[in-house]
Image 1 (cartoon, rainbow, N blue to C red):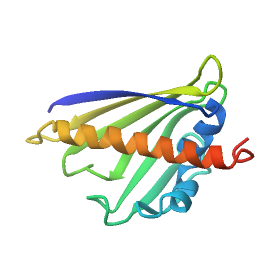
Image 2 (tube, rainbow, N blue to C red; image 1 turned 45 degrees about the vertical axis):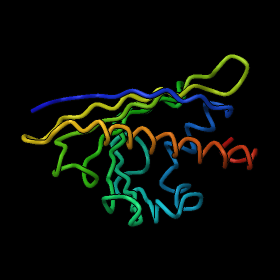
Image 3 (cartoon, helix red, strand yellow; image 1 turned 180 degrees about the vertical axis):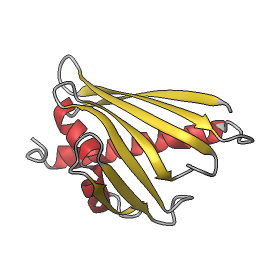
Length: 160
């Protein structure tokens, strides 16, 4: 079974703490409001939003799969960092055996932040590592961050 990973850096003019809360921790609530053409609904379905909690995001036909379930494996509220594992949906069971994403929002000098994303995955036997899928994943993460950023810039009192 092949394993792989990809990394991504995104600059934002929004403070790390606000973007971390909106784009990662509360994305299941915010996404259906600001990106309903992609995310139809979302909710924490196990736990209370802390380590071990599982959330589900339900997607529109714009995506090639109907939903994902993600488990929060690690969170550091002071360092604006978390790690989550895809446990169901998406490409789990069809192309991927496992997939984990680590998000770290680092305050930037002069304001804003830099988000560093590292995704690691293990392919199912016979599945091919598709660079097109990697590019789509990076574009999706960038879109999420930029949508949350636009919302936060338009709503300066949100997620303080």
